[in-house]
Length: 338
Image (cartoon, rainbow, N blue to C red):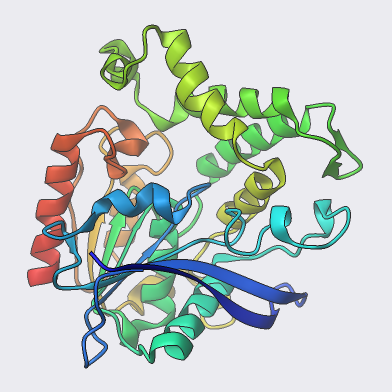
């Protein structure tokens, strides 16, 4: 499998907020070969806190995101530590001075990158899980002529109020660390990051996951071992300012929050021409099936297939779940072949 990695220099980008993000950089990785028509492209935006190497397990020869047939581009969302983020932006005392980047801003830079680096005007599929799904929805609404198919896994077209409450609870835990002073982290907030991991562990997976002690299949020797190793450990490796930056992007995610749709959510959904596959997790605690059901009413060509999984939100990221992965891949293949 051909794999390349790069950094697109977007230059000075005027954001929705009116701020200018200077020397903005977009990280990406590509897999497979672009055909002569430049139309065998699958775009795969990363999810919250993830970097491309952590999601590329879904890509490869014979997979649904098949590199024997498609040129797959994974784009790193701003704030993930690879694309422009507080942790790699050379401004002193970044804190609240870091320019807020919306999903609208992000997908417009992604669109520029595809055009300028490869001359790509139309893609075969945009595929995303969680915050990646939110970006996929933005692509379908904002660039309908470029997106014939979209796979939305455990995600929604805008951040729901309950989802926002979840995010703000974690933000509060991070900022409760003594390292948060005057709007910035003055050192690594170790207690805050551990608290974030514990809160996330209760939301990302279902009650059934814990009741069945499914964590034992991951090699954990106890519930406490699982939470410390897989959740506290995961977030403790991240930069806290990056995590806050992406939370801001997530909270303000809304396909209609722009001049194109002027807040008309139904109109934004109606503008989508793509064949859309909505795949919520049946036990996801924050991207709910009901959100996708409400969206479905306004989509011209769409189907909703629930992922039957005790893995909750993480059903859509089947790194350790062969049954979930097989279920997802079967339906994504059907979408690509339709």
